[in-house]
Length: 444
Image (cartoon, rainbow, N blue to C red; front, top):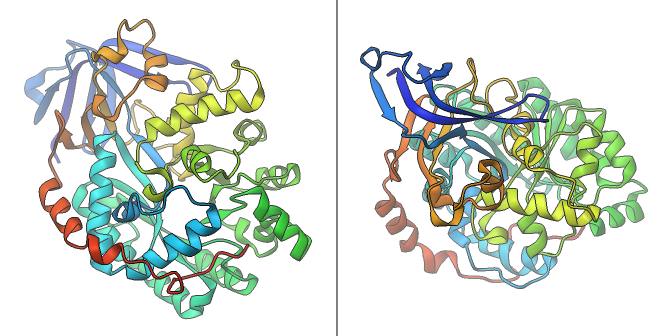
């Protein structure tokens, strides 16, 4: 593995407590193997001692972004479920469309989504989808980092738990450690208690966590209370899901007692505000989660409910919508928002000591950002521009695990032309929709 010197950069550093953001000017970042060795003033390191030198020329180096909950291969269905309610989105569109899905579709769809995310500065993703062997192959090829979980439904029975157990074992630690694997029972409303308990038992035996949707809307919470006398979050507690580390997707329908309960366990919440707006799901109480000590990470969800995999957009929307929800612009400050996007998102995916900071000892998952664009001028505040002005095209270079995967906007690991050609070849087949032919039914 080549040692790498990033010369003459502005470096974004975020305090571990989330209170302050610092900018170091005219600094070098030294990478040995796959980790950051040092961050030091430019001129102290001899370039001849490095296998590769990149002159950053005053641009900004910051941690690579983390997408804490997505269905990346779903990009192949982008634009096919617009302007519909959440129940129609599931029952009449998404789950009928996914009945067309084949393993090869996931391979090419995953590459398409990874290419989009690399171009936007996303270096890690927690993905929750089907045919995850093919998704893992795509991640291996792309050179990015991923926490992969094979989504399963209770209707598939316990043989599916065994199949996904084999997937977890097969890919755990693959890609030189870039790939980790968890369990993914879909949600309490698609998995009965017995199925959830069996999933937990298997996750415990393998020493892994669970990535699951829960309380996506307040209507789901109310329906669960009416049917069972407990909230979906309480169902997870009852079935042992909180006995292992969890990523909880959405939780827009959290009640105060749910927040108290989640705070007692090793939970992290994936927050995808664009999806919530587009499907009119209601907005998750991010400030209340964080005040209770529950980490929150940024997410895009899938491209059929978001249309893009742009974490910068999620960052902006989170900050503004939490201000609106609290009826004051003084909450979710720029420093807090950047902390959520970096260190706290790393905590959600279980890597708080490895990702989310440009500091010695951390994994070298970094992006170089160009703030010279007209939409950043005049650049009075670098940090405000990062939260409120950034466009994916401002990301110039992406480094994952110490290796350059995009340089000066050129992808080095993926062939965009081939990916687009392969995806387009299956467009007609994938777009066929037979409402009564679906992989699952939404009936919370």
